[in-house]
Length: 500
Image 1 (cartoon, rainbow, N blue to C red):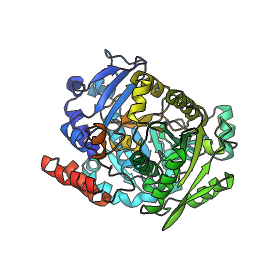
Image 2 (cartoon, one colour; image 1 turned 180 degrees about the vertical axis):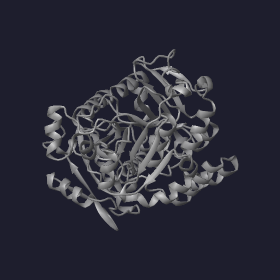
Image 3 (tube, rainbow, N blue to C red; image 1 turned 135 degrees about the horizontal axis):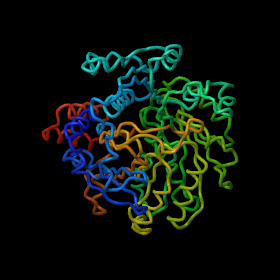
Image 4 (cartoon, rainbow, N blue to C red; image 1 turned 60 degrees about the vertical axis):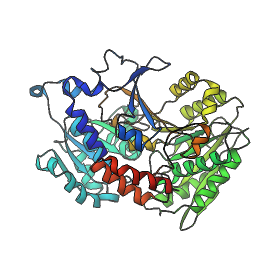
């Protein structure tokens, strides 16, 4: 619903691309064009107080040609546009993904869509068919169910021009290179078995980097809930779930933070391992580890944690943990030397870039005083070194997914034979064409505890935190708000957020 509302605004102001007029644009310390997309309305400032998001464009984009590189599909005269049929292989983990992927093809690329639901959540097709009835009646969308055979049939159907997949790298390679033993042989020969244009979002071993600083006990407790959320939201079945927690080795609070993470996981409501293959993936993770810890969760499988060896710059004695996305409640930790926060952060960024598979999302947890100490320009320059499509500062990159204004996808530059986290961006309701990354910032402390540090943002414990006791209420209230925004609905949302 949020994406629909955002697209209505963009499309209503498409003439002259006037929707860009109220988007602040600046240059980063690297000279790149940066568009400030959140906050953009009074509702952003009320419901996401203190949250901001920026889109960094690729270096070829300038302030002068930004409009040319935005919604360029609409620059083609209608009579000259050529339609295509796009096949979307829907994700099975998050209900919104198939719908948002359809919006990308339909409204940003002018393609009609056949959406094949994932068998895990194909029951959603009943609701999506109701919601998308106008598009279905217009002949622009079809929604189908089916297993592997249906997917293979559609991927190779002569009427399908393009494909988009959200899923695993192995599924992508099976489509492009043939799968199994054929993959390596065909890659070596440069011989694809499917020559259609393919875009994708394929997950990663996503890091959360904790930067040393003057954290209080309250900060430790809140950020422990934050880390637990990054791992256990949706029971760990998120492509941007934290899988590698990077900690400062010499920081006296690292052990205390890990203890609080463990305590938090023990008291939050647990969800089952509903996604197929999770138990086997966790068993495989455990078999690789030398020092597996079990963070018990009453009523569900424990979250398993592997503290990697601290004497290796490659991420432990077994690179396996940096090369394999587990897609389950499993996480590794890696500790890095560095007394100076800026020096440490550069080492952590280099580690993530060089030793972790994929480029989808990375998180940085850092005290505001630490940013001031190293300097905002220095901090931004370090962010610029982090090769991820979404970067979250004192936030989880899942928040970037939540805001459909934010482009969502891997860092640009991947190829079919080294696809990593995928090719292309989705969501992106402002329709920027040449995106490098999206950077999301959130308050380090929640309201009202932040008032003590003279920070006046009104964001309490976020509703997506797994420790929030009012998730079920807030979900309904926020959905009702998106349907018909009204200032009269805000107080009830805010009260329940405080009670969470």
